[in-house]
Length: 102
Image (cartoon, rainbow, N blue to C red; front, side, top):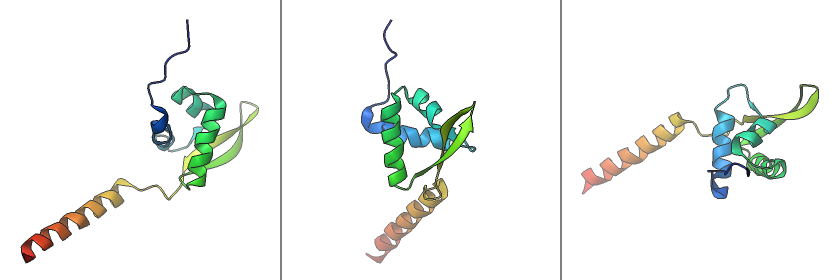
């Protein structure tokens, strides 16, 4: 029997990785992320590296089960739903104000 197919498209991997990392308040091991995404270790490392370079994820070296591994956490740079809601409200209010000026 072959490998299980990965349902996440390659272009969506970073977004899915962010979602998975953010779903755990105490962080997610990089090895767990790899398993959840169903990808090889090297590909997972590249995705994590790009997320780190973008300032979205931080990686902490830890010992788990007697082995060195990495714990992944979202950085404070992540937009929260509160920020997004406030932004959309501001845009909507500007739209309403412009409409009332005409």
